Length: 436
Image 1: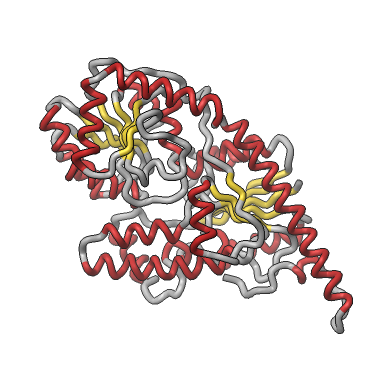
Image 2: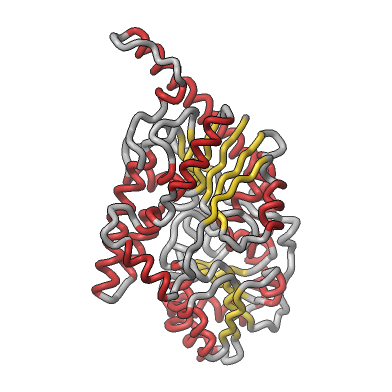
């Protein structure tokens, strides 16, 4: 198939979970399909990042866009400008006349078989009418993330603002999903959530394409039995990760260090916000910022922690830790959507005292830690290598493309039997709704 892939950023550098998931899946798809990739890029993007994209796409098109770093005054000024915008801020900031024009030009130039909208956000730039079937490749249920943000805020003003964004996202996400011939979710939990909060919005059953992991890159690396290192990895400008680390350092880590004073925590990941950087002031906490390779930090850790309170989709970071044979302690939200059993593959704990107790227990009982490590590694190697997951994606895309074309043919036949003249332009029968 000829596939047009839309995203809000380039995949390189591979420093976010969503980028990694897309990269590995596209790498396998590119062996069978011709992919054109259209995305925003920062003005200072290295040409090596653009050129490197050709490993997964036959053609790469970029539209320049700058975004202020989170936590800066420019970021808050930009967010303030969207307060009266009916679109949620996370979507509205990606509206772009230039992106739409480039998209229209590609659709006019190439007869694509399928459009893939990677995450919800590029949908804001779709034209009113689409010339071919389109699929929404979701990594989260976006409205659920904003609902959880609103629920965890303690300040009345923050609750008000996040609640407003949640309601806008709920409306927008439901409207956007109606435009697509199919939707891909990363877990059964997300599929059930889509069906529950957007009944009737999706044209065919949601296809589940699970998270995978590169088991050859993330190899088995058991920790030193005497290690007192904890580690968390992730993009530290993503609000759920920021919230997780603030919560852990404030409410959980002091309980752990009261029992095990030598415990050290490494917070590893790109673009730490000012609030995350301040966590280095806590005893035993190190904030690294971006690193070229997370594996040495994970290798040294006795326990990998995932204290997320906000989120959706699945956590690629957990599969990476499991592939390296790490014992994982997570909240239920942190492991949401993953096929893991608490007590067998990971330990789940949702309260500060139970989370701290789980971590301390693994530090003190190495045999128990080794059991979790072995079971975790075995699960991902046997079932969730990217090659197997990519096969499921390929099949789902083919089904959606075929169903979309059949539906278009039925509409064309129906119209030709009515009072209106037959439609000869394929684009005129796709998605007659207004642009979002």
